[in-house]
Length: 50
Image (cartoon, rainbow, N blue to C red; front, side, top):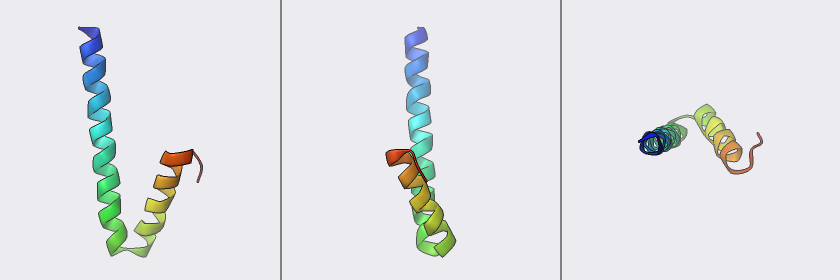
């Protein structure tokens, strides 16, 4: 049962991360500053730097 709970937590965290990235992507269409922050987030997620 512990494994199931850990798997659920992992999936939930992945879904939350996807929602945040999607929200930031939409925001980047509406604001230049949001676009800059979105680029920073993607860079951090893909190679760990800013």
